[in-house]
Amino acid sequence: MTFQKKHKLGAVPLNEEPFDRSPVCFNVRKGVKEKLKTVPDWKERLREFVDSLIEDIEDDCQ
Image (cartoon, rainbow, N blue to C red):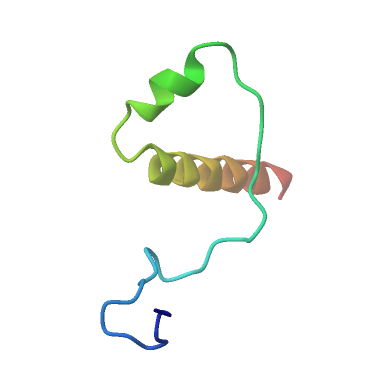
C-alpha cells in the first residue's frame, strides 16, 4: 500500500521556514551527546542559540 499525497494525516512541518537539507555537524567531548539528549526540546533550543550567536557576530562586525 502506497502513501497517498495530500492525505489528511500526512506529515506537517514543525516550523514556518524549512530546514536546510544538509545538517551542521561538530564533535563534542565524551559524554556530552548523552547529556544533551536528556535536555527537553534540545534541538530547537540549540537552533535558537546558534541564531543568536550569529546575530551577535553580525552586530559586532557592523
